[in-house]
Length: 80
Image (cartoon, rainbow, N blue to C red; front, top):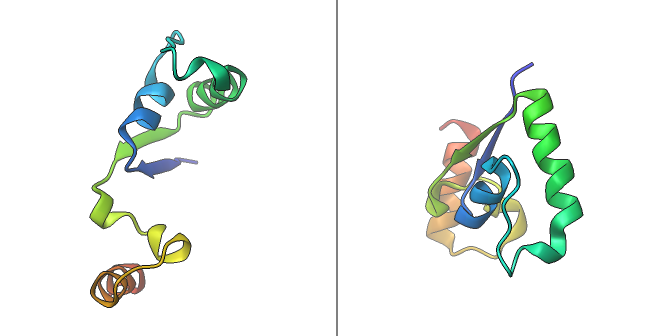
């Protein structure tokens, strides 16, 4: 099974793809969560892909969007 995670956060992509783990002063406090996440990425062969913020389909479920943005993402989600 192939899994691809589409992410628009550059810091999350860097932390997820860095092996062996490298930490910055800001990232060291969530050390345990990133270790588990990196191990799962490596073990399961998960792809992390950069996606533009405007193309992030998950935003339709989690954010209050303008009508134009909502309709654009709805069309993409439904394949219209």
